Length: 236
Image 1: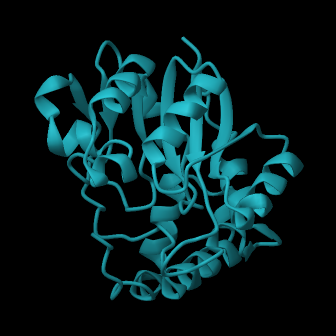
Image 2 (image 1 turned 180 degrees about the horizontal axis):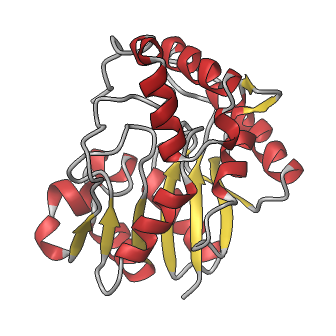
Image 3 (image 1 turned 90 degrees about the vertical axis):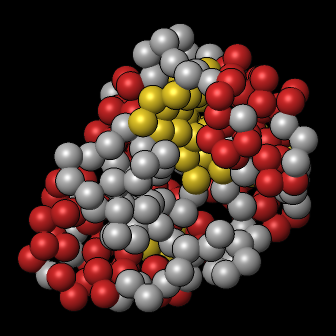
């Protein structure tokens, strides 16, 4: 089974436009994320799915510079873009990761991929115990094809897996991957300037080379770091 990570990335973020290419530790943020993803043992390929909007030419250029295949599709119908990328890259198992997760962890990716087993969908977001920003969703190509055919609501077309976990969960065999301790209060995603300030502070302390346990240890040593973006509310 060819396991392909498809990273959805675009420049048109509402709260922090251009965030995926903001400089972080001497590289664009997306390049740092790709470097972390390359450490995963379970991925056969890493790809990027961006839009056809001219502003996302920069995302495609970054993909070319990183020698990562790039698919371009609809900006609004993200589900169609994702399904098109899966077909283009001949993915049999899709690993969904968004481009605002510069602390994504290879070990967490591997754990969720291995948890899929004979299920249709596995993730660590159904019952959150991991920090937001380590989100990994894994599903079969047959599952994605079914969702593309049957999902019609605006939310389901915008949020690739909404149909699976919120609209028709009874149609799918799902596995929930949970951590041994609840760290869901930690916010390691990048949606706002405060989020990025935390990530910059972590990268200044060597986060590029730290795995998930190492990052937790760093936060434990310096609890003030987590307060940098503790006030940020997750967009619904």
